[in-house]
Amino acid sequence: MLPRMTRTFVTVEAAASVRPSRPARHFLSHRASALGATEPRPVERHQAIVVGAGSAGLAAAVELGGRGFETVVIEKEESVGASWRARYAELRLNSWRRMSKLQGAGMPPRYGRYPARDDVVAYLEGFARKHGIAVRCRTEVLEVLPDNGFWRLETSSGSMLCRYLVIATGWDAIPVMPSWPGAASFRKELVHSSEFATATAYRGRHVLVVGAGNSGFDIAGHLVRAGARVTMSMRTPPNITNRDILGLPGQPLLVYFADHVPEKLADALFRAAQRLAFGNLSRYGIPRAPTGAYASHRERGRNFAIDDGFVASLKSGVASIVRPVARFDRDEVVLIDGARLRPDSVLCATGYRRGLEALVGHLNVLGDDGVPIHHAGTPDHPRAPRLYFCGMAAPLSGPIRIGPIHARRIARAAAVDRRMRYRVFAGV
Image 1 (cartoon, rainbow, N blue to C red):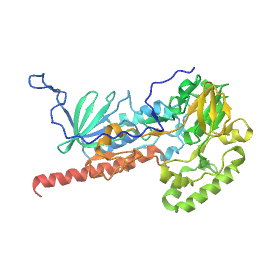
Image 2 (cartoon, helix red, strand yellow):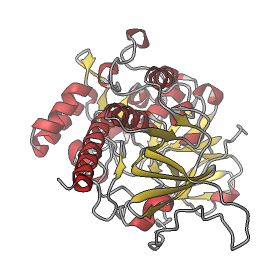
Image 3 (cartoon, rainbow, N blue to C red):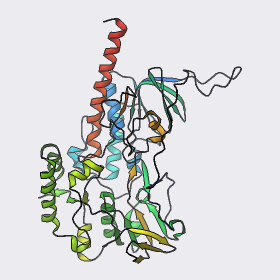
Image 4 (cartoon, one colour):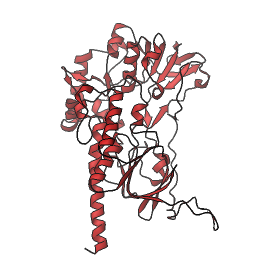
């Protein structure tokens, strides 16, 4: 059995828990007890607070600092870029290096066209050092409350107060683990893909990858190259493309279509390009996707799968596609068509949730899917003025590129709010 990491999971069937709205609390720490208690811990105050020290959070801190806001970044993990550090060793960006940069200098050319996991981590560390970003690690935000025109954060390190609050905790915060009958009795390895550390650990093993999205395709390709026997369980056929098109990075073209070509035409062109690149995949178990690539992204936030060799393994017979999983029966995985598999490991590439319900769900700023209603940096929600979300999207152009775009919008909005507030105070 491979070692497991301790993580928080939610099941596909679990509904988002939304807590009722709470009144603003007194400015003194809520930890103060009744009359005669010891002196309450003082509240730490900042002009702006950013929650999350990933690429989007760092971008937001730089933009706010550039506008003159005293800003601190709060990170619950040990260091910046924690989500990247936790990913599997073989991970590379699917987005082009030149289009995956924060403010200022991009990643160095030695990282190659598609930087590796450790390269991205080094880039984020260097970015934080270069800009002198104040990052408070090992500090978890437990609750966010409005407090007389400010935002009050109850954290693992005490209470904090700010006027401008940015949530940048990432699109893929909480792994979603399906809830199958009999899963608890499965005696082999059954884990979410977030626990997948390296493909080399699976050499010679039969691995069932559940999920045919971008992560599933990427992990499956690495497993095949590492010498594993891979079977993929697919529910919804994906739209598939290569990283490179005619030897050049495909990302600029894909993003251009998304921004400038009517959706139906863009979907038709993508479908034609997929057929040209891969041929008819129905004979290998991947029929045509029910929704076009761009329509699927708009409707469900689902990106297309980037192939890095898995399709070739299907065509050569090294890997195979099977029906969705119905249940588990001790050492066997039972599919919806009744077929039974006996894999050594089951890796569930079944996606993530934003995990914002406990933090801001009581503010009624989230949609039914748990995504912020106003998730593109600005505007802020009328029910939560000066609360912004940065990088809380799954863009076709990649998560690193979208952070600075949202950050600039947020910093501009905060600066306008500050200017208007000063005018009111001055009687202008």
